Structure formats: structure tokens, C-alpha cells
Length: 618
Image (cartoon, rainbow, N blue to C red; front, side, top):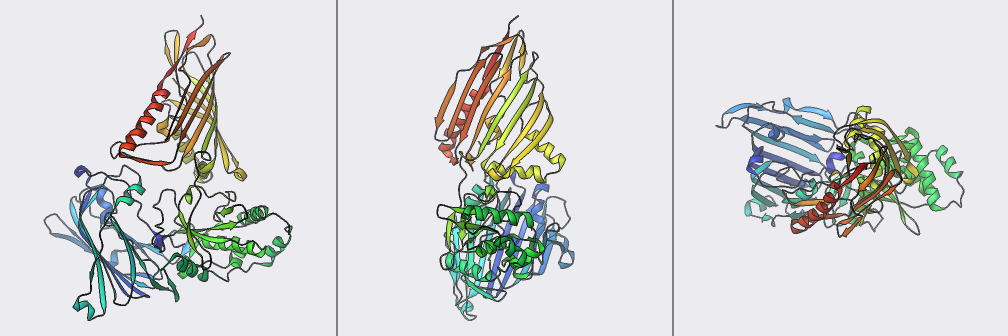
């Protein structure tokens, strides 16, 4: 789908700190002038003080244009702090780049104007004018959209024809001032105005979602709209769903070779087997290429195009899969989603185009099979962190509605670890560890599929916390049918244990500490476990010759609302068998609850820091 028409602000949680101010927006104003459902003008103007290199991003204009959206004018003025003009830039200095030169075909372009001035501090004034020929989206106004940037004053004004209705919803902001003054009424217009002031700089040391949730913002959507001659309404999710469905209907013709394959499938094949077989057929014959010419950012390519060419974007591949299922008498539904691993969720109380991706749902008697049609490797029924646990729009003629995608819990998201450690008499060790990844951890397989060799090596080293070690061997084994994969490592670790006289002091936890998985921010007192998980470890330690275990911490089992921790250590001959299981549940912890979560985490850390003692038999 049209990536940049569905952009959203990905910004993080905050603390106020004058020392962290990299830029200051003295004023900004966004004016949206809706002449009719087919004509929209957007004017933006701002003045910003840039204090340092980190704030320089506020001086660079970056946006996009396409068949429906054109940059008509831009004026950028650089001034010193006394107000003296240094330089002016305009349309002739704008650089244009394809939205994606590697895998995307479309008529959209990035437009960038870099003033190339870094005599800090300085002031940049930017004014732009965009003309829209038809529109589906209206901008979401978030006046504080960059970290470490304060805002003195920011204003949003929406001007419409008097008889034209817009829909709006504010968060962390009051109602608009609605103006129907005489001078506007002479032109049969009205305006809506929101303003905010004195927003302190925001530090970038917590996750994006929480900050976005806390920011003042205004969502906007047209009631009626026209895009490329296609009329629609966003008065309800049902109306929007019907528009999308109509736009993509009658595009399910297949080539004869595919019909021949489908005819060869047994007519009495169970639905799940039928879906799996056709899904595998699609994956083997297609690849994802984003094609977004004209209204193609919203409308699927025909199924026979994908059938012939072997590629398509998310809607085209989803439509192709849907067409094959329909040919076999299996009905399915489009699902619109805001995809991404850590993005703000769709606001289900505000019908509007908040989506950037589509996948497929196949209702069955017992369940709904979810199909991510852009992947050539994941199994049917698996959606992973790209689209899990969020509001999505289930498209059904006359009955489209918001539903929630499945949550992968701590029971599904599991690191299962089997390790063998051979310890020598100096405290050095060789480690062989096998890690089975399941649930959303299956997503990590993509690193090994698409990373370069050096990137894979860097990532592998980041998985271990030892101060001095070498990865001698590594391999990965995939089980796509089960949505699991296993990584196997051979490591040489120097000074894993500490030699003290005739004794060896061995760490209680010889794999990953809890800090490897969670990172609470003690400044903002915020912690989110976005997806619950389990790490279940069995570690067998081969003792050095003539050494035996003389001290080990007692077995432990703790359980709280945040999760649980279990530890046992048993000597069997010349081996110690350690079992360690950590479960963290999904949750958001702030304020006093954050402090209690820290106490739970501290208990585990103290247990992990305990030591075992080996003594020499000689």
C-alpha cells in the first residue's frame, strides 16, 4: 500500500530537560484548506532554532509527492541569531528520489531540501504549499514530532466549505475553536483551530509508543472523499470497508495453468490442508515487489497479472491468494492493518485510513487462519510481530469491523536452550549451546536470511554477555512448518569462572542475564514488556578433573504478577546440571508499579549473581 500516505509518527517517551534541547520550534502552523471532496491544499510554515548537529534534522525538509499530491512551492530561509538573513532556497534546490529504488515501482518520490548550513546556532524558516488532486487521508497533527525539540507555539487550522463536514478527534488537547465569522460566511466557509504552547524538550531514552500516546495530537478524516474518481465515506468502518472492497472487486481472474493446478487438488481435501497447499503454491511462485502507480497504492493488481509475472505488492499477493481460494470454494477476507514491530495502534474509535498493509483471513469452523502473503518463508497461520496484538479492520461487505489480532503470549514466545560447558582448572570454558526459537522469536530468522555475513557475525556476538569470548562455529536450522528455528553455537570463553587458590568460583547464571531481555528506564519510571516470553535453560557443566562441587545456592522458585523464576543445581558424577527458567508476562509498568517491577527484577538479578564453588580433591 502507499507507504507514505499512511505514515505515522514514531516517537518515544519523554523527560523534560533543558540540557537535552537540540532545537526549539518558535512557531509552526499547519493550514488545511478543503475546497471540495476532490481538492485539498496544505500550507505549512515554521521557524525553528537549531542548536547543534543533533537538532539539524529539524532544518532539513523531507516529504513526498505522487500523482495526487504535488509540491507547488517551498521557501527556506536561514538566519543567524540576530535575525540577519544568511541564505534563501526554493524549488530549484529541491532534490527528488524514488520512494524505493530497490524493490518498489511507483509514481511517488521523496522530496528533500537540505540547507547545508551548520554554523550553530542558527534559525531556519520553512514555508511549503502542497496541492492535492483527490485525497483519502488528512494529516495527523502532532506538533512535537522530534525528540529533544521544544515547542513555543504550534497551530493547526482546518478551513472547509460551510456545508462540508470533517471528522476530528483530539488526544491530550482541548476542543477546537470553530469560527463561522461573517467574513468566512461571505465565502461560505468555516474554520477549526487548535493550538498548543510551551512544550518542553523530550529526551529519547524510552520506547516510541508511550511518548506518542502522551503527546497532544489531532486526528483528521474526511466524511466524504473522492480519489481518482472513486467516491467513498469514512462515516463508519463499514462504509470505509465497503469502499475498499468495491475498489478491489472483479480482479480475481486466474491463468489456465493455475486453474489446472487447483483442479488437480482433491475435492474432499480438508479446508486447512487446502489453504496450506494453495499458500505454499503461492509462496513458491511469487515475490513481493511494491507497485504503486496512481491509485495502485490502494487498488490491487489483477490476479492474472500476479499469476503471469510472479510478483506483486501486499494487496496484489493477498488478492491472488484470495482468488485461488475462491476458485476452490473457500471464502476469505481482506484485513487492513498498521503493520510494524513497534508502532502506535490504530484508533478503533475513529474510522479513517490508518493502515499501511493488508493480509488475509480464512474463517473455518473452529478458527480463522491468518495468511501473510508477502513472505516466501513463514508458514500459514503465522503473522509474528509485524501484525500481532493490534486493532485491524476485517473487510466484509456491509459488515466490516475492527477486530484484534492474536497475542503471542509467554507460552508461545520461548527460547529453549540446551547448553554444555566444559570448564578447565583455570576457569576457562568451551560452550556448546543450542537455542530453539518459537512464537514471535521466529521473526529473528529473517536476520539470518537477509543479513550479510558480517551483519550476522555482529548480531551473533551481541547475543552473549561474556567479556572475552570467541564464536568458533555457528549454524542455523529452520523448521518453517512449525514456525521455529534453532541456532547452534560453539564458543571459547576466557575467564568464565575465577580461580581463587585451590578453588574455582563459578557464576550461577552462565547464559543471558535478565538485563539481556528487558531494559527498564529508571529516569522516566516506565517499563513495557511488549510481548511476554519464556527462556527455559538446561546447562550441563563438565567439571575440571579432580574438582567437585562444594557449594551451590539453594533451589529457588518465585512467582509474582510480572512472571516467575525457577532455579535448581544438581551434581551428577563429575557434572553439574543447572535448570533455569524465567517467564516475563506482557505488561506496562509505570510509577509505583514500575518500582514493584524493579523489585521483582532485582530479586532475579541477585539470584543470578550468586556463585557456586568448586574445590580441588587434591
